Length: 440
Ligand code: PMP
Figure 1 (cartoon, rainbow, N blue to C red):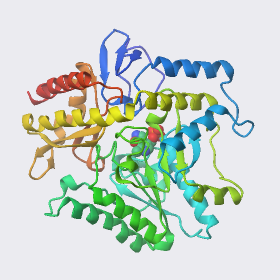
Figure 2: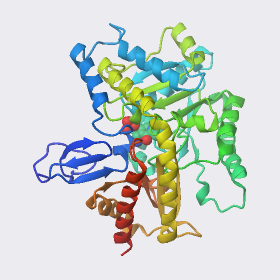
Figure 3: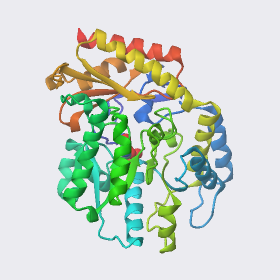
Figure 4: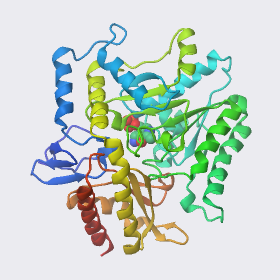
């Protein structure tokens, strides 16, 4: 079946088997082979596959109305999902705008920031500082913010080239600073850059609170987060958290921002928010930002499918399930179990140089040398090889070149939040087997 002709084109020709069905943390191909979905797809399937209660709720909405354009009708699914989202989000974030994906969410956040600045008589603010490495999406605007060279470069003449600062990759930092000092050092890069660009021209700073595809679950020292918030406030720069990957419980809190008590000005979400049951995303912001924009004539933005009742009913059912089954608490607990297991890999495999993450967004990175943290020889093609060895054994993990896509290999392990302790051990047994085959 794999060789059946295909009219589709993705990044490359797709050699994968056909998907048959999903159940909990497992996926099955058409030959009946079972895979642990160790990366929840691309960190999407937070409540697992084929959740029957969620499917029943979506079906109930399908039987009533699948589409009503948001400017023609209010709908209960969209109103209820917005209310539930606000209830699960820290105080100060109480207005929601729905979109259908992560890139849309990031660009919507930037456009809201820009329109707010205009209402404040600050139309000269347009620069959005982001970090390197980072991933914020593949549409041209979101790509402009993305610090990932191989994705950006072919399109670079088509974008403005927004300013970037280094992400706090403290595991690569060889200075003798304490964790706290390291956090402050990397936060200061933002202050320096704002001053260099001219504070009156800087609209916003966008960051992934825990790095995703580009950095492999990079967590900054605690001191980083508060200092970044202070620096943004000092210069009137809006702080945008890209929680497309980290949101909806993935890190053991509904928003990763909660780990550090930060209230961003705007949060972008997607992935686990629809959890694979619908293409869905959102931006969440405070009334402080949104009301002036509405007063000035409205948010000049909107996608046709934004807030459609079917996607919103799926999102609402996902959040209800997350709450009823206490999946965010489970993500925190199982994240600890998984992290402890991953750390034991460092004893066994000298080519694993770092293990990191938060909740159920975890990663390990391959290096040639743990002292210098020099990446493993790219000719070994570890990035593809380990993924294939795991896949053959029935485990899906997610890998990318780290360090901005230019060198190194990291592997994200991010199973659905419903995973049990026994299943974490089952996942790890397959991963060890794949690492043994890689080392052989
Ligand atoms: N931001 C982050 C942090 C992401 O991880 C992603 C997707 N990997 C995106 C934005 C873009 O989301 P999408 O692919 O749904 O457009």
